[in-house]
Image 1 (cartoon, chains in turn red, yellow):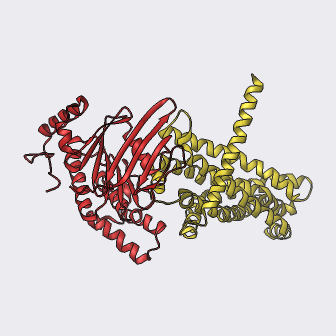
Image 2 (cartoon, helix red, strand yellow; image 1 turned 180 degrees about the vertical axis):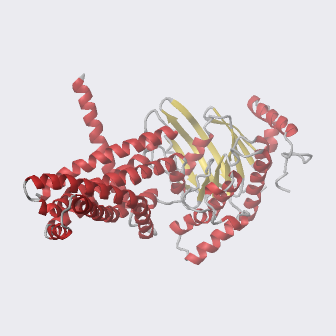
Image 3 (tube, helix red, strand yellow; image 1 turned 30 degrees about the vertical axis):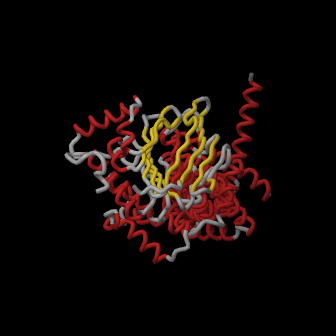
Length: 268
Length: 259
């Protein structure tokens, strides 16, 4: 719905092996500007490795990652820093535990921009307020719940106004209702701020509802790529399995879908 | 077989020294681009100083007491107990102060530093800094390295002061030496070279041991065959052992250079 034809992120022939174990055999994926693309897959399919290659945390063995047409890493090349145009939301949040929530959010602004101290304070407080954490800026991560830590991490990822945000299992460890809330938050913030998102997740129901496109990673390849409607219609056995498991989940877990139709729940 | 093991260990040692040197160079190289470096370094001086001052002062006091007792008995045999102040002061300033203070700081703060960085590595906090475009070495390591240049000498001086008081307690209060004799002997003993040796030693120990501890924690994830809490625990243990051995080896080198 928010897709444009020109991809902001284009991945071609990405390969990564650890010793003899090939995690990513050949990944090709395009992420149009302004869209949310979810990457699904079983545990151990290489979703997080793929995302960390995009973020520059893991150097791929081969392939090319283009961000807005500019190479951010080539085969066997150097570390591929994602730079200020990209942010990464870690599965475990990765908040600096020696800094308060406010300091965590202000950190990338203070260290990588030339903003004045007043502007940094204003933006960091604004980011926390936007996520309902205005009253918790002076709390340390250990003093916050898992859901609140996730929101602080999200505020930190968004405070630099990145063009693309990479989400690594953003709902890991959260209860069903909190998972629901996190996806809703991502969709709302995308609408407000206009960033592009790549979400690696196990949550098939939420991914289908929140995303413009879905990719299924299996055995080092993208096995399926398309919009949620195509995913629902696909006859691929693995897609079918995931879809069935999502359907079962939707029927049995209260609060996830309720009586709202699967498609478009977050986007109304 | 034995030769092969020796060769393997030697290569491993040389490789480790090389890794440490590269780590140090990368930390130094990160300094120019790091913002708020000196504010963070001051905070590190404050944190390490506050954390270590009590233990350094207490160990210094007892070291001085033992020096006073042993020194008095030895000197009394030669009829030279009047130079007890000199003995205590020179022993502390030239040798015991820098070495024992460094060992105490390693135990109190170096181990914590290695563990903290190891946990930050395992919990992806260091990776997070990278994704934000922040040089993790500049942000986490450089302030501590700079702080070590100041905090080790400061704590060593505190150790020496406590030791001199300890020597006075045992020499004068316990053994009955006249306090004026003790003070006069101590006042005349110290040359400028002695104090310089003390400060140089402590600063060098600081830089070396903090670099070792940080390197062990920072590279905790690279340990072969272990991960998680086990890798942090091994890194912390190794950091303390390597740092202590390095202090003693560096002490031998610096002492021979000053003599």
